[in-house]
Image 1 (cartoon, rainbow, N blue to C red):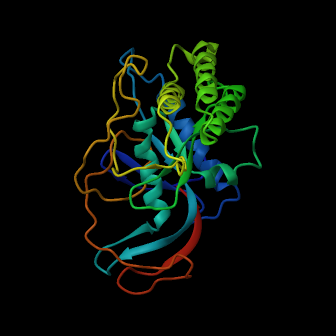
Image 2 (cartoon, rainbow, N blue to C red):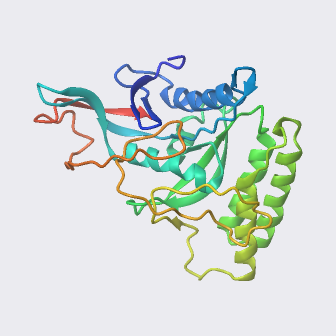
Length: 292
């Protein structure tokens, strides 16, 4: 509400919110990212009965064309969203457990918020092709400028570029420097920078055992959800998070949560998000550009 978003529904322990529909917003992408950061700030030191209760939230933010409107029949109808971007947002939310992050956004979000570079800080985390998609997406972590200075994000981006150029030894050293800077910063509050540690370990393995010559740097994921490990990455023999096999899941977008909603979609309809409306049993839907 503070950022003029529209709350749509609870899905299990998740919240689905959308920006720019049904009411247009000039800076809807910025509003979506800012909402995620404000959520983390609100629950970071949550107090109840004079006790600080740790609460972990995971957010995924994406922007793209969707269909928005009334779905259902005359007896039962709801305002809802349809589109490939909604599924990608759900995947981003779930990937936070894999990379030990709080808010992951797509490259489209970073591109759309370049006009406001002073207000947001992003760092690239990986190049992934999520389950169900062939096209890779660079995923970024959205960070609070107060807790993760821009210099740390820039250094991390340099290391990530070295990694994509197969300069694994250099990238490992730079990721190690990012870890040191992030964990010794006064604003770190003793938190470990597990994302840079994980990428450093990956570079160390690739430096000893280089990938094939046709390696494109894309992590092709075969799972929808991931189990967050409580391990020490420095002592672990495994460089990646263990992928958790899951039951069928209903693919709506997720905001703050630690798990994906356990519901299954019964109906699958093909539609063109570029069309203005989709009439029929689903109701009248409007094509729009939105952020989730």
